[in-house]
Amino acid sequence: MRPTVRQFLLFSLASLLALAPARAQARGPLVLAAASLQEALNDAARAWAAKRHAAPVLSFAASSALARQIDAGAPADLFISADEEWMDHVAGKQRIRAGTRATFLTNRLVLIAPATSRARLTIGRNFPLARALGGGRLAMADPDSVPAGRYGKAALIALGVWNGVEGKVAGAENVRAALALVERGAAPLGIVYATDARASARVRIVGTFPTDSHPPITYPIATLRTATNPDTEGFRRFLLSREGKVIFARRGFAVR
Image 1 (spheres, rainbow, N blue to C red):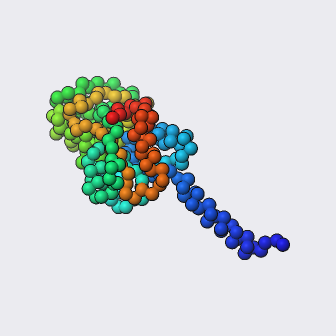
Image 2: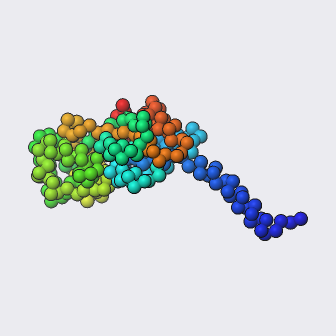
Image 3: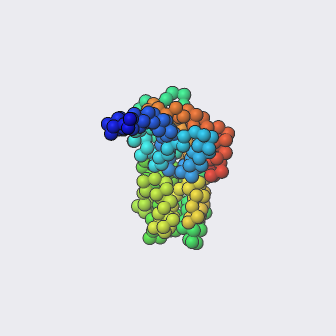
């Protein structure tokens, strides 16, 4: 006897419902990560998936923007910040799971110019940054909220040049947006992380800021209390493992 249309539809619906849990489990952990981690974290996600795990879902933005998403209840599994302050903020809101926070990466802060630029500067006390900018602007992440911008502002203050360039800052929503301004030639100079400069063939490093001119650049990771994906802890541990740290080191990060 041939099945009726109603029977066929009921069978199809039952099949879809049966498949739904499997499809839900096929998604890996949702990771909210600082914009500067794009290449390295994508490499790590591919290495994790190659071990027959579901590929993590990665969302990149400024740490400040991600922390605000978490504040608003974003249903994510892991958070990786480009500074301790935004992780402290999230922890203070009772948004991370106890015992899962760890700091595992560091970076350097650099001054960049378009690859075709002939700009030459020696970074030091009272170096002529304002003069080097001329009528142009200094690209950097928002110095009031985004980690890369706050590190940059701290360095410029410590070196005695902030007052001379504050009015020339082109604040960007994250460090990769600042990088893009220099790549396009929209800004003659910019402040980014060394790993960002390394990821682009369209910029060159003019100089590296002294490590004692700004707070240590560190990257903490933590599991969020909204985490539901069963692979969350496994992926967190993988990133913190020797194998995971090698992946980040290849992209220029220093590991801890």
